[in-house]
Image 1: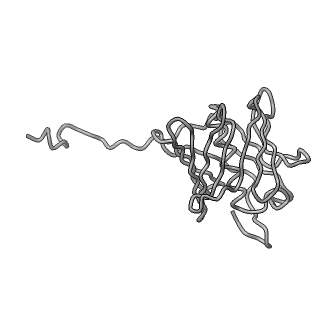
Image 2: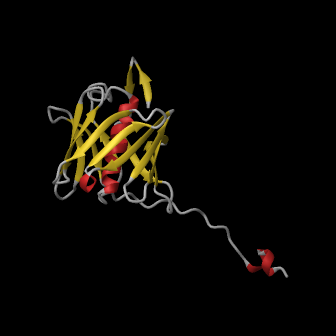
Image 3: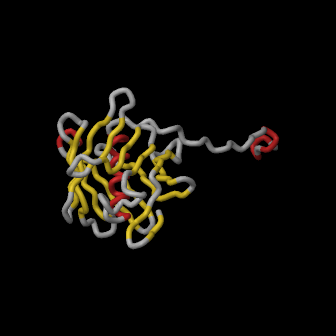
Length: 192
């Protein structure tokens, strides 16, 4: 993201990509730039750690039927926001600790996705199941609906976590690492 004229400027398209075929690790990208990383954890209840440019957030899923997500700063453990999914699973509300809220809702039927909207139902960010995220704002300015880079990261990470936890995300497979060629002659055990 770029800083310009007192407000955070950002590209209109973001992409979540899996970075490990074995671990649940994802990168948030804007073109060639890595903006942040999300790592899933937790055994019974899903958790996630988000790291980006000096920010670290912990997202913890809980409540009856995993309908609630608490978002806190990793260092201070101060809760920044809370999300509650409605019983249908297709809608919810994100409430920021310092005021303000965004609505989460499903969009489309044939090409399903989800979006966060402001209180007037204007889309703020739209999530496609393949990991693509579209942002909305005037000339790329996010200040209309999201006041800071940290809040933008929070919204982008939460939306992706909700898709992952509900098993709706369909990201492309992680790139396979190039395997080192192994030949019996190269193996020390075979040299004897």
